[in-house]
Length: 195
Image (tube, rainbow, N blue to C red; front, side, top):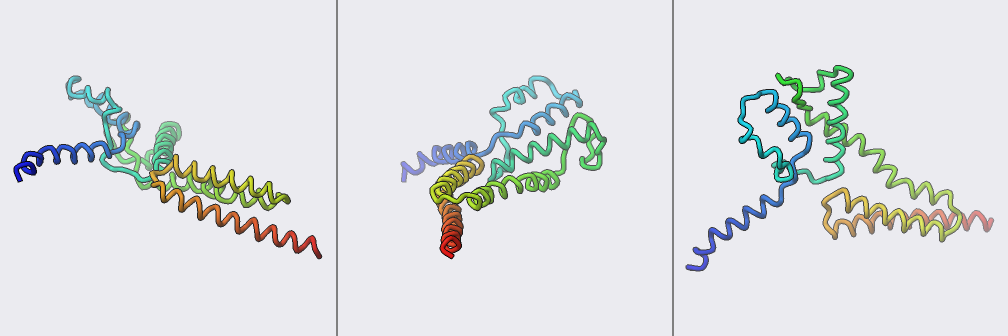
């Protein structure tokens, strides 16, 4: 019991550190907008904003599960800010007294990010099916399936925070669908050539 009491503070410290390390880094645009707001307000001492020079130490308290979506949302946000400057699209932004502070509505950014993601996902999934449809050789089709499955797993691994078992299941499912498509096309091609 004395050991538990002695380690209680240490356990809390370890748990808090684990939670702190689990946060994602702060978005560059968020840090930039905060800097711009502070520069425009001119009411905070330099020593009190020195932490902004260490942006690698800042983190976001709202996490995302999908790193590609997060990257696309940052891209959409930059594009909307550029469009605002060049085309005067003020209605896409919430009011801010400081013209250097850009507060883009989160819902619009998320929607546009997902719209941009759609053609990439469709291309990734359907490209090998289209390629295999034009290949006559079973060896060429198998090479296409192996390449497509490898690319699919690599993209999932690099763009999401999926666990290893989730990657295995997704890759196996994707490969199975491609193999079924190839064998059914190959069987129909054999039947047509025999008639």
